[in-house]
Image 1 (cartoon, one colour):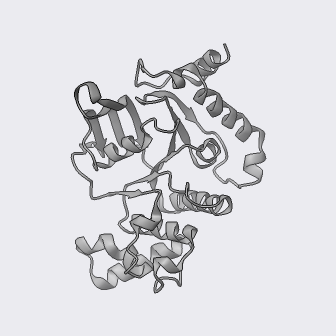
Image 2 (cartoon, helix red, strand yellow):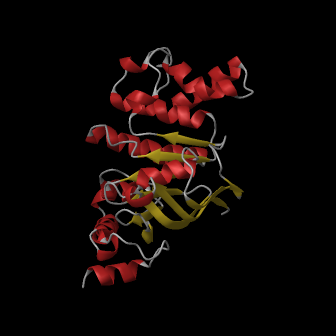
Length: 279
């Protein structure tokens, strides 16, 4: 696999002087093309700040972010973001189809092509036939599907998702998790998803990065060795899922995660973390 995203020594600080707040500190990791990786950490640890730095929405205070080997110094054309608050990210005066087409209006794409690509991604997220409706006519889960479709219509190399299912009910959340894995498999997308939900991170990901409390640093980088085909019931009942979930939970309660002054941005081994956490 080739490296899609390379983050090196990333640091971001809000403010200056005695009122400065370091949100993330010395984060270093890479994401391979076609991988679905989750970042999980305590509330307020800097997960969303990290995604905003990666996306180019805010400049990092230090370190570098590279996409396809090129340094990110603004929002890349082939990167898309799905935010948690879908109700604010969709335009209520535009139809679903026009919302999805919106990113293509600034690209060299004809009106006919825009309509065709919009229909294709709406079908991919299970919303064929609703293109003429307006967002306010849809349920919350359907609105978030529209947000995902809009992110995919530009065929991004990297899709960033910032707690995208936190505002929907449990049943809809499970459906959207399965949709994300299906889309990632069918389209070959590379996805980096932030969540505070341990079960969601293990169920979705090929890999889970565990962050410490703010200022965030990476304390563990776990490979999720579950089968590629997953089911909300049988996968979550499996011994391996329960074991992996337990590993992540112990890591989040470990001294390395709870500390406030990180010593390194590099991941440590699972075995080392679990040994320390059990002492």
